[in-house]
Length: 309
Length: 276
Image (cartoon, each protein chain N blue to C red):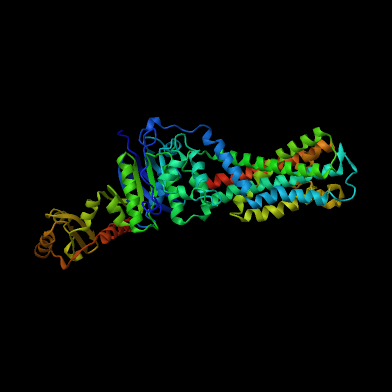
C-alpha cells in the first residue's frame, strides 16, 4: 500500500519551441486530495495529460500506482473528468453510461452509477438535450464507473454555484477517505485551500510551492518588508536577512530587497535591522492576502525564468 | 435527490468490488475492450439517425425504382437481365454511401472530443475502429438487403439465386473501401461537412465509374478517365457474378483504391493521435 498513486520524475514537455512543463518532480500518496493550483497556461492540463498517458513526456517519467499511465488506465485504476472530454449528443444518458461501462473489466452497475450521480430521472434523455450541469454529472458518472484509485479532475467546479461546489467536494472527500487519491487542477485559490489536503502551486511549468493549505497561506500571512538597497553599496546581505527571527523568504530583485516575515512583530525587527545596520532605504511594509501571495509566488517564477533566458 | 446533489455532483461511491486501491485485483478487459454492448449501442444509434436511414434505405430503393424503369430492362445481361445489372449497381451505391457516412462519423466524434473521452477508458484504438468497421458493414448489408428486397418486389430483375446471393456478398465486401474513404475524408474535412463532400462526391464517382450508366455508353475520352476512378473497379467486381466478366485492370483498380483509402485513413489517424 506504499506505492505512490502518482510519481513524476523530472517530467518535461515541449510543444515545438514552447516549454509547457519544465521539470516536475511530484509524488502523491494514496488517499491524498491534492490541488494543482496555478494560473491558466501554467502547465496543469499538460501535466495531467501525461499522468493519464494522453501525451508522452519529452523527458522524465510518469508512473501511476507503480504502472505506466496507459496500463493504469487499461486496468481501470485511473479516471478523469477533463475539460476537453466530449459527449455524443445523439446517445441517451443511459446509453452513454452503458457504453462506457462496457469498456471496463470491473465496473459499477449502470443503474447504480446513474443513481449516484443523480441522473436516473434523465437516463432516457438525449445527451444533446441535457443542460451543462447535467452533462457534467454524466461525466462524473462515467469517471466513477470503474471505482478508480486515482481520479483526476480538470477545473471540476467551473460553472457550479457555491452550494453545488460544497456538496461536490464533500462527496469527493468521502471517497478519498476510502483510499481514493484525487488530483484536481484549479485556478481558484479558495477552492484549493478549502478542499485539498495539499496544494501544489505550479507556474510556468514548474512547481513553485508545495504544502498544506496552511503552509501556503503562511506565505501569505505576515508582512513583506520592501527596501531599496543602492547598487553602489554592494550586494545585499542575503544570509544575514534570512537569519533574522521570523523571516521565511528573502528575494533580491535588482536593487529591490523583499523580506517576508510570517510571525507577528517580526517585520518590525526586519525594518529596524534594515534601517540601522544596512545601507537600505526607502522602506515599505505591506501585508499580502492569499490572492497576492499566489500572484507573487507565480510571478516570482516568471521572473526567475526571465533571468535564465 | 436533485435537491441534495446540485449540478455536477457525484454522490459518494459505495465501494465496488474490488476496492478502489486494491491494485492487483484490477483486471484489463479482453480484446482491447471490444464488446457486443458497444456494437449494439453504435448500431442502434445509426438506425435512429434520420439522415442515415434516408441514405441507407430510401435513396437507393428510390433510385432503383426510377432507373430500373428505363427501356430495355428485360434485355439479357450476363446470367440475368438489365434490371438485375441495375439492381446490383444500386445496391453498391447505397452500401457505399452508407459505409462512407459511418466512416466519416469517426472524424466527427473526434471533433466532438469523444475520441479523447474514450482514451480515458481501456478501449484500444484498434477495437474502436473495428467496431466502426463492423457497424459500417452492418449498415451496408442493410442497404444491400433493402435494394434487393425492393428489386424482388418490383419483380423485374432476373438472375439465378446463386448469382443474386453471390453478388450481394461481393458488394458487401466492396463497401469496406468506402468505409475507409469515409474515415479518410472525415479526417481531412472536419465535422459535419464531410458528408456534404461525400454525398455529391460519391454520386459523381458513381456516374464516372459506370454505376448509374454502363461505362461503354461513354465517349472514349471519358471512358479512359473512368477506368482510373474508384467506383469503376468495385462496380465491375460487384457485378462479376452476373456478367462473368472481370477485366484485370478492374481488380487492380478495386484493390488499389482500397489500399489508398485504408492507408490514407491510417495516415491521418496516426497523425491525429500524435497531436492529442
